[in-house]
Length: 445
Image (cartoon, rainbow, N blue to C red; front, side, top):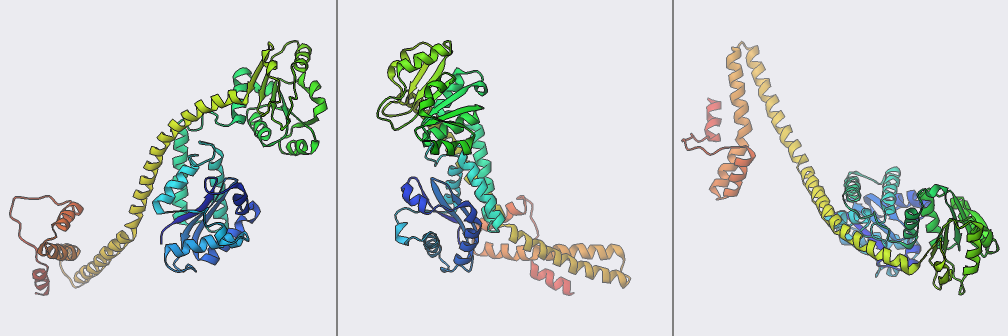
């Protein structure tokens, strides 16, 4: 049975459904072992993020659902629903299934950021590596899925190295911080003020921290959410009433609230600039309606950007990433071909092993005969010549019989393959035909 994956992602299911099928990290170990035991899988890796849940499966011969791939896939879907206390029909219109090479191609796209909500985002590769490590710890990772994921990691690294898929920001949070890096030569010395404490501001804080910003204050109407960010990122929490005081210290201001009226007016910013002795402030208003009065942008020493300004940057960068994605697709197709080639090579391993064992058995048998002749006083030269002759005859006997049969049956392609396999060159000279039956009678004589 073939390797396959069954999944749900941001393209096929709403966030409500994705939340219901997400796996808690602390339960992943047990979930993997339970799934393999219940379904009869040889191997399994579960990838679970906010945007996707994907189950990579290697069916075993004793799969509980029977021998067909379709039945095993149904059983995996039913298990997923049951594990999360859902009805199977709740997932029917959300799941997708990829098999064999399509599954390999899909996971390579995921790892390279081509299947993400934000094209080219880098976090998913780390999440895949984490899922791989957890499956290995749980004992549900075998040779087949290991080969797929290791090849995937190599391709994703090549995509990041050889294309510009992740170079340009395509989220407002990342774009805002990237613009700040263009304005300030050393962000580590900058003070930042965040107004609001929602998801967008949290992303900005993450990017500021990654860029080296040490001093970040978060102003919110209530301190509860700001305290959560303090615990996560080590920010300072302040109330809205503290904004005028904080504004005098801030080199970077990013605002994103749900306020229906502006929070920062021209007068308040003018007073802050005066107190700062006109040291510049970089301001980004990510709110709709706007948190910062447009007139603030008219002030000298103020660099004010709206969400529309950032959208223009993002559109341009998205085009760049889309161009890079086309380059990445070519690398992924090459990665799939490399994986297929390795799989085909693995397919011959057992045949080569049997071939070698048979040759070694013939060798040992004929060597034993030669040693017995030497014990009986046979001249060494004659014993060695006899060993060489018999060993050669035994080794070429079966191929010779099969080639004669193929020739009689008109299977010229098999003769061509034999010539290639044994590196035989056509000769114009007449060659005495070897007949295994004649050789048998000669040996008896």
